Length: 459
Ligand code: ARG
Image (cartoon, rainbow, N blue to C red; front, top):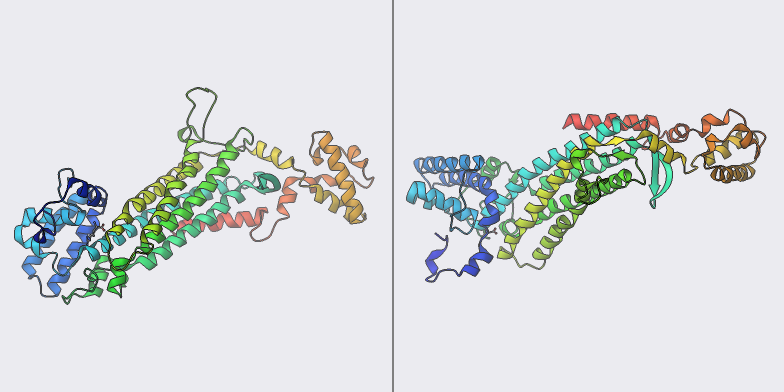
């Protein structure tokens, strides 16, 4: 039964039903819709619209539907109802009869859907927050076990300066921690209750909107009824959170794809998160990582899509706004999937210390240390710089890092070079000179690992 049949004598066309009906996707808000109705029935009783007995019957009927929704046993396959709101009312009417027809008193689907979707977003924020903390925990664990591994840091995809592998993992810990706080911010702003705003102007019944907000788990009621039913910025913020976090996921995935490549060989991925080639038996492809990188497209698209849908819409509710759900629901699903698989990928990573070390040594990043060593021995910096440069040219011709040249070889360029040069040419020495807050030295990295562990433990 349509919710609005009275004014109509003809039925809807099939094509209209296809474009108009949202039950196919808004059925996932069944629990939120039913819960909202339970609270609304209490508000109606408080306002003197329902007797205590009527409210009790309605709440019992709704509770039974809620149980079915949570057990996943509600059957949507045969329904003719256009959306989840109509479906719930029809189900309730089927069991309770006429009394169910009192439930929608003073309410509109406009404040109802705004409430339901906020509740749905809030529930999923809780899930996604847990997912993010899971990724942070996996990265922290990877960092903890790779503190003594040094590999090349890159700029422009060119080897730049050696860093600890843990430092790389901890960089993403910072990004995902900000994603968590972004979600917290979005939650704080969406945490207001539209219920009681009616179609657009506010309801005429004296319901206690603060009590409704409290019982629904919102901070407070929305303060302007037009705004409450019209805006979807809470969805946009969630989509922005998803997009930014997916961007972080894609960069992490891209780094790991590169580190896992034959050219780098810094890490190996587990069999469980890679696939083979149907033609080339030797291949082990980083498919999970490529999908983590690739799924950004549809998530960014959903953000852009809803921004365009909302742009220029006149107040208050317009049916355009029904388009807020599919993209957002898909974005949430994809983000959840990517965060979940990220944990499996990170747990499977084996870092090849040897390959990392070799690659870090190949960039002659210690040439400055050699020059500083010569300065310590009394040679003017300009001259020391020249000598070090000549030693690098020689080392390149020998296909060796500087520290593998013998003292005799090094002395070709300066007689002051002795055995004591080797410690300062070691990668660890070079890296641990970055012993500053935020740097890649062993102490700041160890501190960052324990700070990350504390963050995870505090969640
Ligand atoms: N299915 C609709 C949506 O998701 C519910 C609100 C309909 N309101 C209305 N006045 N037509 O937006």
